[in-house]
Amino acid sequence: MNKLRGIVLHSIKYGESSVIAYVYTDLLGRQTYMLSGVRSAAQRRKSSLIQPLFLLNIEAYPERRRGAMCRVKEFCASVPLQSLPFDVHKSAVALFIGEVLYRLIREEERNEALFGFLHRHILLLDAMQRGVSGFHLYFLAQLARHLGFLPGNAHSPEDAYFDMKNGVFVPFAPLHGAFMDKPTSALLGALISARVDDLQRIRASREQRNSLMRSLLDYYCTHLGMANPIRSLAVLEEVFA
Image 1 (tube, helix red, strand yellow):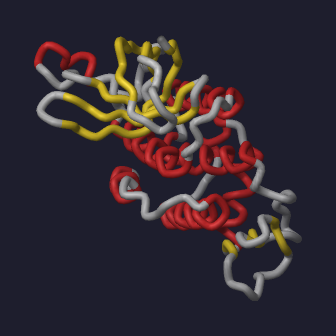
Image 2 (cartoon, rainbow, N blue to C red; image 1 turned 90 degrees about the vertical axis):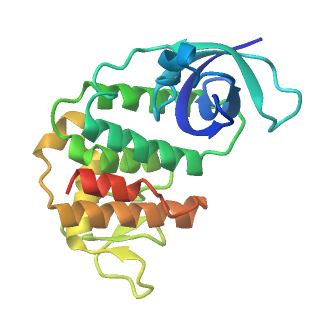
């Protein structure tokens, strides 16, 4: 029996009462689990735990072959989230981040550093009181830095454009056209060097936030092969409109 900690990324209803859950685990990387009967009336409380970025303890039967769907014997909340399930803004951010991770992470391999990074940032989101509207951008910037492909240098008034092709801030707009304009680049630079407590003090218009979000998604698609479009992006933009 595999005893794991997991982060829910995405789920799909299956049959009348079951759910297929895509979960990032601490020991086995991304896993796909069949949760039988969790949508029945008797299991309704448990089905509420299968939400994006919820943190679980899982007891699962070992997989018979790599990539196969496994069945779960038991699962429960590993850390009860205090505000994320009840705050519409945080829930929208969680939906967006969960979908990004679902499309980005494919490895069925142990990666304690990545699991720790994700776990820590979920708890930061849950604990936040201000600055939630910028958290998804902060997360994408910090995740890119954690994965090692952003940036090659720091933003400055001299290096005011972010070259998305080469991953560096540069003094002039590149001729290849894959770059962020000055305001978007400045916002990215601020988020890279920020702590989560700084988000409430980073000022940006809705248009600037949306521009950076779409540019970062393009950057992820180009450098990591992430599938696009992200369907929950429309939900996120509507919530923070």
